[in-house]
Length: 460
Image 1 (tube, rainbow, N blue to C red):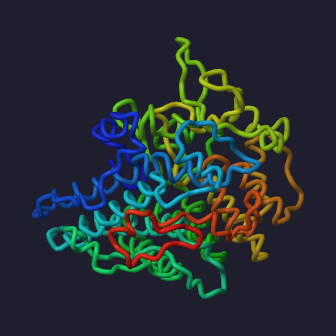
Image 2: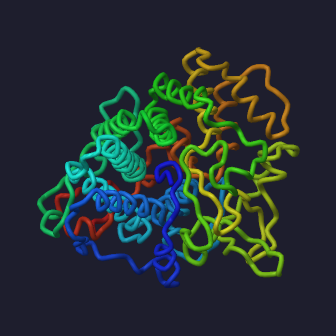
Image 3: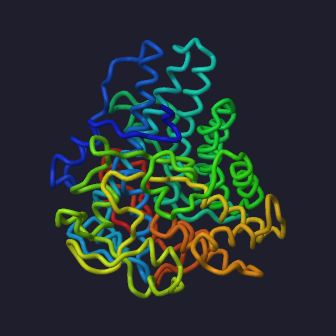
């Protein structure tokens, strides 16, 4: 199985994420460093790589937090959190403290994935088959690159096109950590510019190694296009998006639900596959756990219904928009209100990058640059509007393309990042407010005082 484009979570993850209702307080201690035996065979290296993908598929990362938290953090006029987990409530209220355990576990698990990728990269000499080595190397660079990108967007100020971006990002570590002493040697935070540069470098390295693996290549290209868009490098984002669209490997699904239900979706460029044995959780973790609220065929309640859609946002959709009539429903389970069908069943597919995003990226970048690479911006947007049952536009403004992006990609983890990069307010806060940047976790600073805390947060 292609473990880059399609990640299937091993069954052991279910035991880890579902075993305790108190998981929000059950975080691995910071000094509990893995002591796995040294890698000695190509099979060992491959298993280490699979382990890295397992980490990014869990609830702390793409299994829940990297999808849900960016929307939850931008909840004003959008989403309503009614759940009991104070960690998520504080994120929704934009009132976070440095001991927030979801802030902590996202950081911790991202660095676990980075460390696993570093372990694989250091072990490459073990692999003598050059084709296998290139594939493994490309995938390891992919993991490290996307983790630095996700970290800097949450724990650093927004990237400002044309500026120095000298504010603090996150620490860059390029060597595997094998013992506690390696952590406390005064490692400092790199700047936002340096962190973005490292993520870009890793993704470019991934692309260079994966030329013979089209699905893997597209996943790296898709994430790099997202990074360039965040930086305002519109020509580069446009060209990568166009490359994927024009590859002919992907097509828009006619059914709006298909990318979220079926593995190997026609528009799935990078996705996490789940099933009953392998998933991010169905009790205290997992996207459907928090987003769903309905009665199943036997009358059982599915989901906690903790995250509902505000009526004011629901009403921004045209009454005939299928993204409203088909992808939003009135909850009748644990709670009532409006809920998204994107995260509907516990064991559904999680598309991290899908073709829809690339059409919107190409359209926005072409519009900003007054170009028509691949197609005109209005044609790209109309493809999505037609699928949604809406009439075609004859012209397109930047506001309109951003509105289509907001609606098409709603509840998929884009919102706070898109609002920041386009310098729109988030509730009462400006896009670059200190309240919209995660704190560096307290216990990271307690172990390594060289880590400087973000403004507005106490170090204890």
